[in-house]
Amino acid sequence: MSDLLLSEATGAAVVGLSISINQLRNLQRMSEQTGSDYTMAAKGDMQRLPFGDEAIDHVYSINAIYHVDDPGAVIDESYRALATGGRLGVDDWFVTNMITDEQLTMLRNNWSTSSNGFHNINTFSRQIEAAGFGLTEVTDLTEEAGEFLSEERFGTTYDTQVSPVLLDAFPRLYQYEGYEQSHAQMAVDQLRSDILYMGELYRSGAAVYRQIIAEK
Image (cartoon, rainbow, N blue to C red; front, side, top):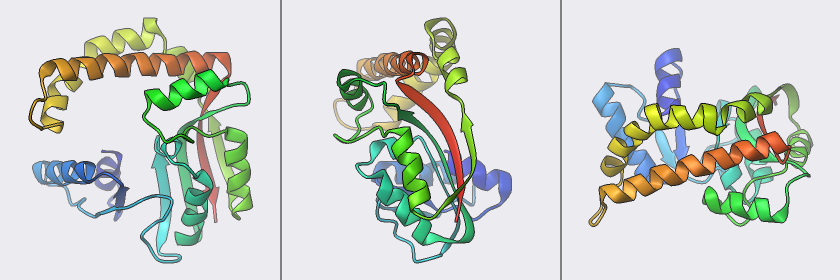
């Protein structure tokens, strides 16, 4: 969805990448429904980008790198594929040295990551610089995220604005035999719980939310 909005807002030639064929099909359907020109997307792994050397002007990732086994490979591949002067933009959540093994295990389970998902912010920052990037901008949104992701603020917003939309959308997105509305309700409830748990980690210092921009 972010690629679709970016394409429409800027007129840039955006090329999406997803490892999920279902996401790519949903993109195609949404582009057709809205009349969007954004149709360029490839099935692939961000740890092995299907693009040539210096073939891309800019690379960005929103809430995705925490899923991968090797964030260093994502950074190295981005550097390889970027033209000189191109930028890598990352908007994601990371863990800190304060997180416990139990908390990390729960995070990975909640968000269906790999066994090595969710990465340490200090290690990630060092990997960016080691790849040859220069850090140009780092924005820490942890405090704002922690304040919002509370029962009082996020819970109310989720229940009144987000939950009804997801309960309508999930059955249409996951069209397979046996899928019932009760499955959608369980998914909506679980997502609510998982996001609120993330807020707990932000407030405790076990996790941070950062926007990072680095230039080749």
